[in-house]
Figure 1 (cartoon, rainbow, N blue to C red):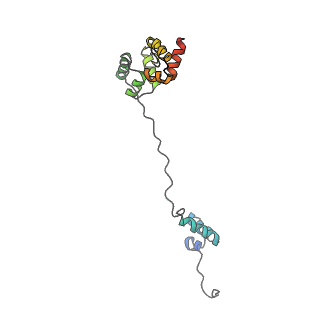
Figure 2 (cartoon, rainbow, N blue to C red):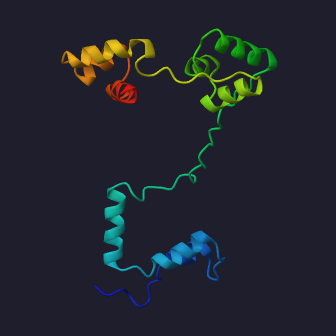
Figure 3 (cartoon, helix red, strand yellow):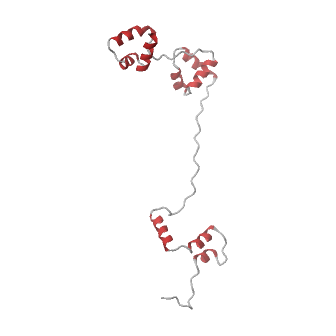
Length: 164
């Protein structure tokens, strides 16, 4: 049925929101844009709304909060205790866990205080090398020797090869 020529037409949405001249706001511009959409566009919008995509816009996402690194600064008495612990036989690894500092930091504090860093005690002790060779000749595997001496099989192998 054709509209009656004498009947008043309803003003478009853009005129209802913006008035006849339009005020240039975002809502006004959106209303003017949607007047030009065809049935295909509106069906796509309906699908998006049905899937929850265009149900509303929340505030923009907040920037991520930067997590700052926790700094541990040892005071003079802690440094003195660190040096005393090392000289009493504690390993650098044990000191790093106790004082919650990096390995490099512990070594730097020890060197600044004139302490000579001990070599790593990994592998077979020199006084036990002869026994390790005897066990190897009896048929023990590198893995068995490593478990026996509390180190890796590679450390045992390297110690025995250096001895030879």
